[in-house]
Length: 101
View 1 (cartoon, rainbow, N blue to C red):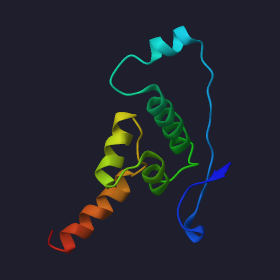
View 2 (spheres, helix red, strand yellow; view 1 turned 180 degrees about the horizontal axis):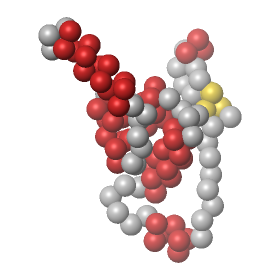
View 3 (cartoon, rainbow, N blue to C red; view 1 turned 60 degrees about the vertical axis):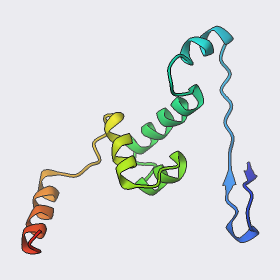
């Protein structure tokens, strides 16, 4: 583990993971527009989010997202239900109606 750059008060510990793949498999898996490193990170993050070990703010930090729309798009692209129930949705709609929105 190492600390990233920046003022001592704001440094965070980071961990680098290394995955060893045979060259032929790495080449085959690297086909496409998204690099293999990013795909591996997104796969790990999506599974950990599904398991409840990561939060939306964690997704933002790990994936470098700036907006909630980016997080929503990521979750949708990975077929992740964000957990809002029909009851919660109805409550939110009622609140919006009361506020005249």
